[in-house]
Length: 87
Image 1 (cartoon, helix red, strand yellow):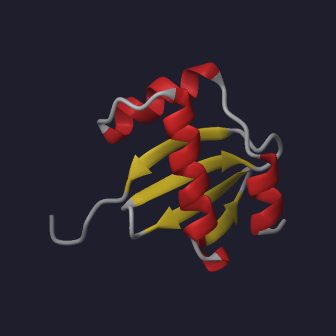
Image 2: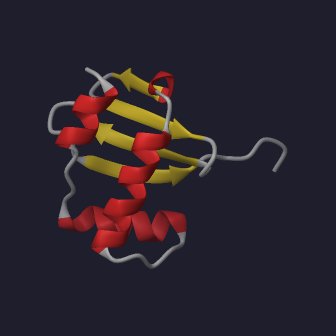
């Protein structure tokens, strides 16, 4: 599975928008979340797209986040802050 295929097929559930806002401590609209994550996915090097089990994990250190994507449906499951080392 390539980065391009993941980006082209990405989708969201209604519940995930609230989860993303809560986990990242932001208050973005659905459109803002989709725009932000779309930009992050495009900017992230393909080597940071890792398939593990039934999910893809996309690590973006510039934005300090990890995006979890279901590998079968391409649905965003959640977005977490990456713990900074030494914090």
